[in-house]
Amino acid sequence: MRRKVNMRNRNVRMAIVVAVMLSIGAYYSVARGATGNLTANGNKHNLSASGTGAYISSEQQICVFCHTPHMSLTEGPLWNHSLTIQASYTMPTPSATQLTTPLNPPDEASRLCLSCHDGTVPLGSVQNLGGVSTVISMTGGVGLGPLPAASTAYLGTNLSGHHLISIEINNQLVTDKAAQCPSVSYKLNSGIAYPYLQPTRSSYPCNRVANPNGCKDNVTMRHGVQCNSCHDPHLDPVPGVTKFIRGASGAPSTQAGWPWTFGDSLCCQCHISCTGTCP
Image 1 (cartoon, rainbow, N blue to C red):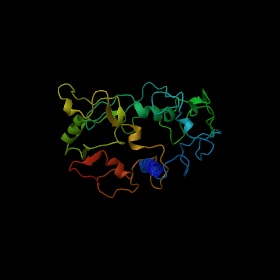
Image 2: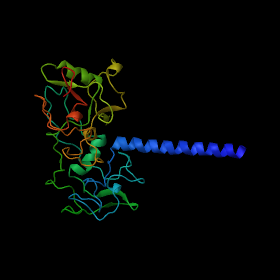
Image 3: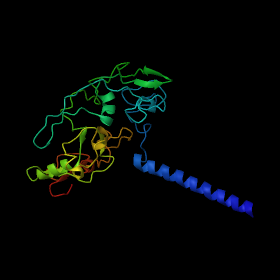
Image 4: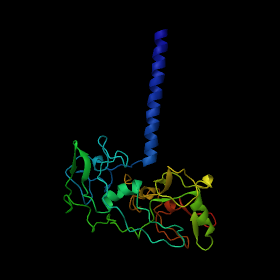
């Protein structure tokens, strides 16, 4: 009798373990997208021999160009790609509607993205491949060099024509942007959530001593806009949605005054009209 009880208990425990594993798998399937990987549909971030982009190598490993489980850099999630050597970038010129001087250099996740996309570091430069730091040779005329300026993926070091990055979004900024209505058409959503808010060391002016509740985050963990607020390099290309846009609708907007032609649902995660609605 006792043996039957023990067997039944063990079967129950095994069933629980299997259920938990399936739940975790389902969570990541939803979080990453059902086909969110680097091997399907020609994801250009697959720089291995199985890749189909303009720049691939003879290296069989896929993840190694960005990640390594050992000897990783501390600046990112098991980060393996050599960091950008650029100390400063040309940032967007501030305007009256930005309410801040965006002179903060890119940090956190944005700096990791720029380690390939600003063209200052060899595309195949990694911290650890077989226990040594090396530069993996790439095709497409790159060889041991950086991403060429002719590439559509090249951003360079002049970021003045791009969306602001490494800018904290706190309650003070939300309040200041709302105060600009109706002279401007849009304000910031007060309920922006992960993954659209990402860690940054930059600060939007807010007196954290006199008004600690007026700032969304504490002094050591600020959050704002980074490259991966809008892009996920692991996503598979989707027809009508370009540049690895996360959460994009892909359909052009038909509402008058809404300036974006794709990714409306993504823009609406942060930007809403002064009436509190979003197309």
